[in-house]
Length: 288
Image 1: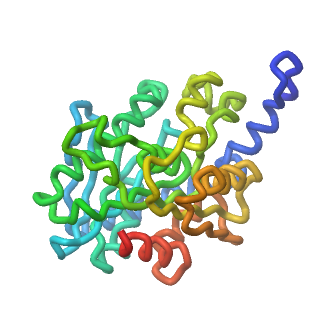
Image 2: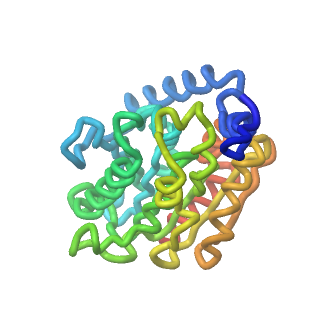
């Protein structure tokens, strides 16, 4: 691939900048390690698995409850370019937060290309609304919900921060989400239109990409947002991570650079109790 003079963009550039797995030769080993750690977590830790929040088989979530009924809730949304991975790959993120009296929910959603991105966003909002409405039964504080995610999950977390919640239910408060945590998040989807390796599944055009980009819409209120990116990530992922803070200056609480991390192993740092990402997340959730 190269520069497309007819369309005016360099497809090779976008493929190189956004194909994170191609830049991480050991990504299969990372995914396998995550799956093993996650399976062990589910065997050893109290959890509620595959709670249905909608009608489709994809609309399921896992909950790792803290012992306190007034615990805050951290909702984690996995990445995978909206077309791969699963909540069950990330169960290992929960125990360090549960140990600090934070409940953790991990969401699944329908994957592209079978599920259009507009429907993926609706499913994520439906999951968060379900958690809010069922907080008493599930044992956490509905007034202390923080949403976060990695990569495509960071995009979906930002969409939850931009959501006009009362439109989605008269019982839903405008400030339903009390904070956001976007790790290597994507907020400007227009470049993906020019990256065939992913857009063959997403099927975005320029108009839909703008409509689905958090960077092109305001946050619905001033909830704090923490962003993070790895020093070994591409220039475009670094630009994306900083862009949402520039577009949402009243929300940006902190931007964290992780110099030694690539696009995948930065997730490990979210669950590292001795690291700056975990510390920032815990501070954000406790302040909710």
